[in-house]
Length: 368
Image: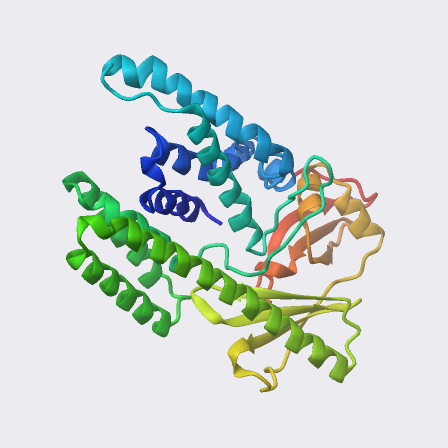
């Protein structure tokens, strides 16, 4: 998921009562919920390095043990060297609760990342196998509404927090309403949800903030569970459809749609093509709409040479549903477009392209 969802998950946990466990608890939870994304620094090198390194070492099982310890030591140092030096009357942060909160916050991160189609290498460094939950779109405003509401019920009790909450809600609404890909029904549902959130906040007593945050956490878990079940049902329906129509499908994967929890685009992988089947999963036994077919391309010497180019080694690690388009040129050279079917629905020109490799007539890379 993107950083906002991770941040709001940590903040909602804090407002649900965990911020009272020890000084610096809320700060620790929010940082811990984001700290695995320190691997985002690899974008400073190149996008290809990021493709190859992201969602690996800092998200895998080893990091679940290392990162909480590092964060706890950093928070204890901050508490001793800065916070309590400024005001010795402050109570000291306690190491064991901070470590427990760090573990909890860190673990929320790979869980949320696993839920989308981008994938995560949960077993790094033991194994670089990718795991995919195919449950949530990588940007899910309904999680913002649920986890953000739980966090903001507490934040908005102060003037500064109320201003920050208003700005955040405005920015999120602009992103939802300003996106032409968002269905009109989803925009209305977002507005209704935000209005309900504001109404609850207006009449919510201060002593009920923790309870409200806990309720929204539970609703978030229920929503995620519903989305997980929806993807599995959609996959099951397309698996049955593939058997009925004689598709030689060896893999089926549901792709969640932005802001539409009822729809999935399910990819059925056959040796020659990807079949994209739109499914509205709550409709039970209704037959899915007709599939759209996208060729996987021909894997030959030109494609093999393209995949050996130095500047696509990260992409090569990351690819899940690769598709290749070879464009010969008059001078005997080639351009190879590398796509991933997760992002190629609709076959719009250039859509889904994750790398471009130019080869000379001897199949040598001509530069990034």
